[in-house]
Length: 417
Image (cartoon, rainbow, N blue to C red; front, side):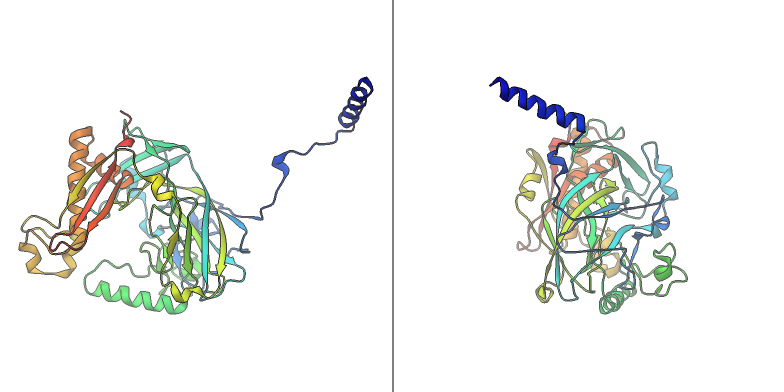
């Protein structure tokens, strides 16, 4: 026994004296990693950033299916906001710069007509985020006409803010914008249908080269400046879907419209209620890691994005909640902003509309804001912000004519008491 101990001691001494490094589990690697980093202060300074959609935008990286890709993303407004920012700082925000996307990444072997399956592996949040009310934007833009800003301190568990005392919003991050580049046929078709909607008086943002990136393709002197689509509306290629159930662990399916798909990520949300009613969630920059798989030829069965998941929705459900019930009701003489383009005198005089989910959602949300103000002592603006990040609008039923139901569900767990 003594000889054995002496032998082990000799071996240990030899190892130490020869400085031989012993392996640790952290040294064992198996994943192929690709990072799409950001550089510079803003998207305009960053060759890996763009804010319009067109197939002429060139990929900045190439990845193989199965590679783990990390996208370093910017906040939705490409802003200079920070923890000391105030509402007056919102006047400097240029909406022509919305949304800065990181990418696009060419997925090797993917062809137009394939489906790209994108599984979200991790989202690492920045330490700062914000939620805003911007005049002229948001679901209740006719009611909330003054700027308002909430600055959030972010961790992997909760978001807290000096502007929202007593509130802690749980970490439920997801990419507000994620998708693939459209092809030439899609650009032409989507541009036409949105122009027709705009001509009818609807809200439709046409290509705008001011502030557009990459400038060589989409800017004022760009080769395709009249055809680069805005990133604000979601379309069949995904983009600004703002669907909070696209959580870590889910797989998002996209039809590929160009070879290589042109995968991008941006506009990451720390947390959001279904509806994102103020126009913003808890907006932040982040590091988003994902992995891809090609499903050859399957786009014939997939006209728009779809999601595969497991327990993510269940895990997001509140332990305690308060719910309001919305019906398609309004005041006589009122025309909500989302109905003004229809230009109907019948709508103006009615107090009850038929089978209108949007009006029912508005009714539920207004009741919820009143509840938060009354029961939790927040201002109306604070309640609207809280609804944007922690209240889910849900369809109740779409059969009991004329009054379809939308409910607003508040996660009561956000209140520290």
